[in-house]
Image (cartoon, rainbow, N blue to C red):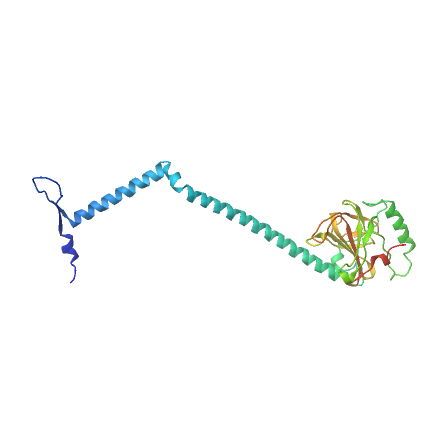
Length: 277
């Protein structure tokens, strides 16, 4: 049986109220009229609900929980964006540091410093008659020693202790300790063990503030866990010149000290065998 909607709309509905009365009353409504009344009633309800929600404080009561959740979520999103930015900068810094360390290693494995190389064009060292920054009696003595030993065998390199502290950990490559540790308090002066070119001076996660100096005859010296670095990369330094201050930076440290290493053509050597007696 098919339903004829046109005929259905013309249909009338009779309503007889069940009221105790002597007279029977019937109300007649067409379907179309009933639908119009229903739509009008629905529209009025929606209209007044919107008015109440947007023009009265009731809106804050009804949507307080939802608004607080949205604010919390927005705050978390902003904090997450800040963390992402910070992490990105840290990753870029680590990548830059790793790149410089690789470059420093390439320089360290060369036999000697070639000052005619293009990368040293802007590093023309000129002697200064005045006492350099960081100069001291130790620097004067070492300069005198350098002049005496200038004409000695070029393959024999002489190093000085980079700090006045006591050696508390010796060279032990079998245990992964490729240098020696000096017991010093934070802020103690660190001197260049020999003259050369600073090829790395920056912060690393494991070793903290680290300085690497390239010397003649394929030697490099490494100074780890500094609190302050006083030299920058591509600086020439003289033996005994102040290059930094000791500290306790980096993950691989348990207290203030200076970790010092000497490498020869990419291999660690015992620094104590090269110190001036």
